Structure formats: C-alpha cells, structure tokens
Image 1 (tube, rainbow, N blue to C red):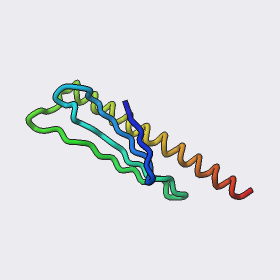
Image 2: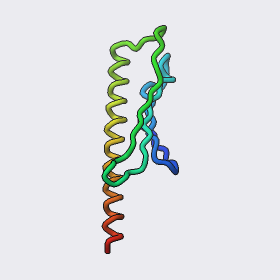
Image 3: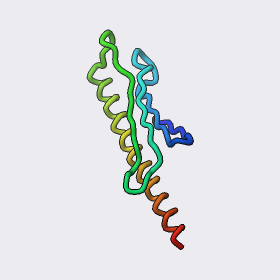
Length: 95
C-alpha cells in the first residue's frame, strides 16, 4: 500500500488509497530528509485534493484516513531507523 523511493536527499513514501474509481488519482506522500543529530528528520507531507464535484463519501473518507495514518506511522518508523543508524555510526566513529 505504501511505496518507498530512495533519493540522494532522503526517502519518499507514497500512498494511493484508491486503486480505481473516481478517486484513483488521489495520492499522499511524505518526503523525509536525512536524520540530523539533535534536530531529527525534516518530514513534509502532501496530498492531492478532493474536488467539490466528487466529494468523498464516509467510507471513502475512512479509507483516506487509514491510509494517512499508515503513512504517518511508516514515516515515524523510518525516522526511528534513521536515528538508530546515525547513532550506531556515531558510536562506531568513537572507537
């Protein structure tokens, strides 16, 4: 459900909650910069809008909510991994 793309500047997580139908073009993504000691990672979340002519029904809104919740949790897990890797690298340099 969540695609991960790695770039020189960081990682992009992309979720497309609707496979087909009138809302198939709706996309949410999180761009996560590298972890910086004492500053954390810069995370920017964007998502496409819902046109007034085709509003989300309650069930669709629930799917959208669950996809956004999953994206945020995945971003938090990735940041924790990046932090642990940074701390391990820092500890390795001290030796």
